Image 1 (cartoon, rainbow, N blue to C red):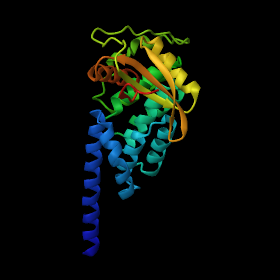
Image 2: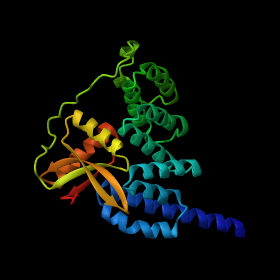
Image 3: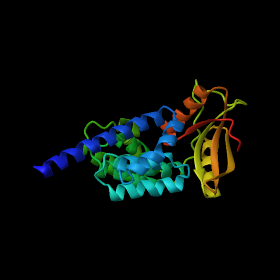
Length: 267
């Protein structure tokens, strides 16, 4: 009887922690980063081995390479956690954003393979197909898409151009995305959209060039954070926070980039 009570208490405790994590994730999505940063040390102190708290910690980590290691550790240690698929997806988005398309395609493919109940399956396939396109491996898209469609009948693969994939393109096309109507115009305002922070200069430069080629005004700055030199990539500058946030959402949807809206950063 006592054993059953212990199980019940543990279950209730776990549910309460999960509710807290979900609340803080909602704050992150709303751009209320500061509130989460202030609370995170307390959560880590109370629940150092909770997968939800560890996912939140990785999400709030500024250094992209450190964050990716945390996501990988989470999926390895807690493969059945409700946050394992989120961590796996974040890793795929990170690899894609860095232009590491071969690694990204493998990682993104693992989401529908390993997490059948994930809410990220459609997006994982979107980025997987783009990754294969970037490396000229259109045959791989043609191979995997019918498999996943059979496994997940509700998936929408109509926009991938399956019939057009019969012509395999060996060279990587240079795609310039025209600035859509309604995108706020970058100027001399105080707001910027930070989309990456890297230890390696080459990684930051790769992301900057990719965004430049797609029509965004981008800067790359050197900063010091936690006694580490980082190279941050920012899309600049906008008159209002709302304009900057709109651009951040666009970058998230197009390239899988997490973002932070900052006002007049020193560097």
